[in-house]
Length: 163
Image (cartoon, rainbow, N blue to C red; front, side):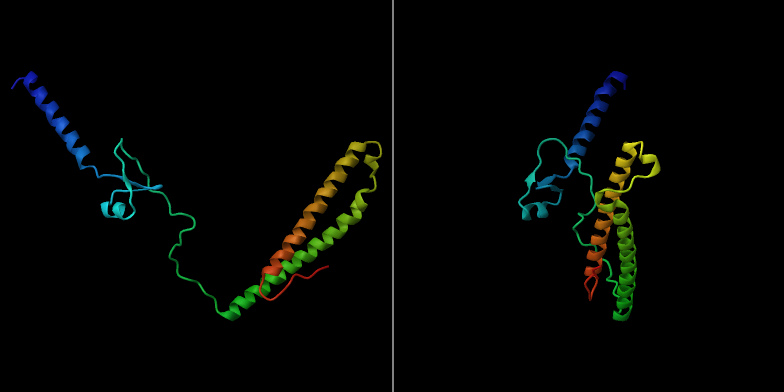
C-alpha cells in the first residue's frame, strides 16, 4: 500500500472512533441544579435532556444541611451534669473577672471625663485618644458581660446572676 492510499483509511478510522466515543457518551439530564445520567431518575423528576454541547459536572460535597450518619455519642446523666456544672463555674468566674474589670474601667473613665495624665496636659490629642480607647474598652467589656450572661442562661437549670 502506498502512503497516499493509507491516509484516507486512517482518517476514516479515526473519525469512526471519535464518532463512537461521542455516541457512547451517556445522555445528560438536568434536574434543576442537579445533573444525572440515570434515565429512570430523570424520568421520575421530569428532568430535561441536555442537547447542546457537553456538560462538565464536577461532583461536589454534600450540602451543609445534609445529615451525615454518625453514631450518637450520649453521655450518661451524671457525666453530663458534671460537665454542665464545670461549664457554669468557668463562665461565672469569667463573668466576675469581667465585672471587676468593668468597675475599674468605669472608675478610670469617670463618666466621660477621665483625669488628665502628666503628658496629656500639654498634648490634648493624647488625652482624646486615651478617652476614646477607654470608651471602646468600656463598651467591649459591657458586651462581654452580656454575652457571658447569655451563655450562663443557656445552661440547664439556671439564669445568669446579676451584679
